[in-house]
Length: 554
Image 1 (spheres, one colour):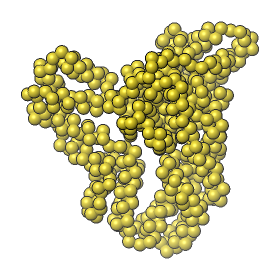
Image 2 (cartoon, rainbow, N blue to C red; image 1 turned 90 degrees about the horizontal axis):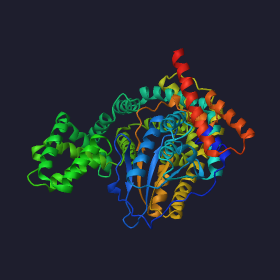
Image 3 (cartoon, one colour; image 1 turned 45 degrees about the vertical axis):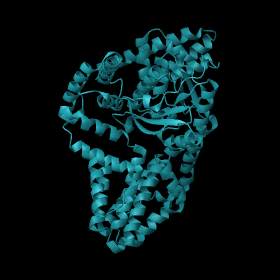
Image 4 (tube, one colour; image 1 turned 60 degrees about the vertical axis):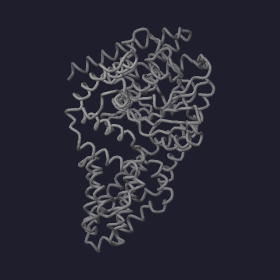
């Protein structure tokens, strides 16, 4: 695998030394029965289902988990989701981007000391050296097939394009920040009061000074005020419904009413129905199932039970409606609708052409910054490609130099603008290569499913690939779920993703690498599992020795 996405820095070196290339074998007891999407649940503390598609004429299902590379919270959540899907829903195949072919972790997953194995694995997850999928494979003792679904050549080119973008990122950000600041001065001078107020609210929302709910309510008020048609905004309308329901619920009573409802049901139900009620209640309390699964079940039981109804538990009934309506929102579609809503409101507020020009340039400078930081969505990339000429530095500079005197705006243009245009094709290349990989990820996953005769699989890939992945799945008529892992902290500053791609090692990892290389020369015939176990034990000792030193120095 070489430098081609290293699940391990130390561990992958061991695997290259071991040289495990045999094909994986999975016993097949005929064609498996595909689990219905309705039977799949993701606990709230693991992740959120963002999108789903059901094709009743296909027996294939792929769960696409959106990866947030090298984010520790995300990788822990992915590990937990995979553990649940593999052990409770009988998923037997996990594929990932960034690698090709069989990914073997047996020398580590079979290590007998579970405590050492878990601690060392978590260390490498924190360092970004293994991801949540590899972590799950190790801790589940290689109980599922683990395969790289990527294309070697395209991924290497994509990674190289990423590394190339780092050389110019600071200058690009400086230029974009400079232009955004100048356009902000234009807004203060040229925007009418209503348009300026809307822009201030948008910026406050982006800066997290206004909550998402408050911003949605604000937009809904403007929609009503301007009598803008909103029938096509399905997800936004459901969001407003959720926010209205939320205001009418006394959340302090929900838990109490749920307990009383379950207590009454337990006196009415018998045998298997009672056993299931108690099991579901316990699984919900221990976070083994999510709120949607539990409350959907509870609603069904109450609806079918005699002399039990939500009139006796009004806050619980309203809360269940609230949960189920929220679950029906497709989050990816929601944010697209909110962007269209903002545009529709602006079109009602524009009074002069210069206001439209400032808004267009402000949008474009944000797109240009995201292009340089490799944060574009596929839809925004499509907008960029359709309007390439508008992103040349001259468009921004010409507008500023022509209009600044009219509004008495003082400004200084960052000299980095001279290099911006020449870099655009290289930045776009990164996205072109990434998009080309979307269909390959799906094709290779489906091919592997066919090879080992299974009907459901999990595909872990970055969120940028999501739209291309679901498009490819729909074209193949394959049902899917899109799941986003729960993340408590983004912490982009300390994310080790870049250091991983640049193949940088910590002193601890360098020590292990040197030990590996030395042993490889002196003992080429070493028993592979003993070698793997030895390095796990050595790694464990070194980690805690280093941690003790760090603590003593604090």
